[in-house]
Image 1 (cartoon, rainbow, N blue to C red):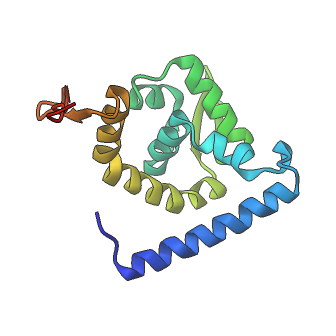
Image 2: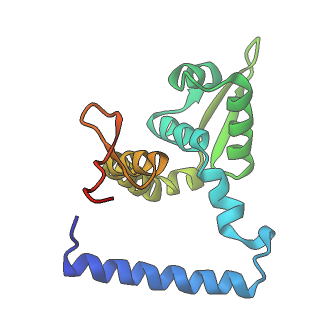
Length: 162
């Protein structure tokens, strides 16, 4: 895929910004308690956090509704992830005075503020997923592996004279 000159300027601007931020973190000694990458993005980058934020972007949901919406998450992991998101201020939890009490989860204002960057990241992942899968196949099969049309790994022919 080739880039336009405008894309190259954008890449250069992003590279410069990230390089400056990285240098600032390095000057702080990469203190984990003050590092936004390890301290904040670690939580946001987990697959469950991202999926739950996306699910809650649609509407507030109860625990069991979230469990049905993300069927491969365990109850334990759902509980832990919701607690982490609530602790980080991204999700709010409302308890209703019913018998038994019912609980609803929704995005907090800060949780809503992450939807823009999350939308961009999800779009990037969707756009690049096929290329990433191909790269994984090549990597897992070694340098000489190429993806076969059916998705199987096939070795590239050995050049004559080898």
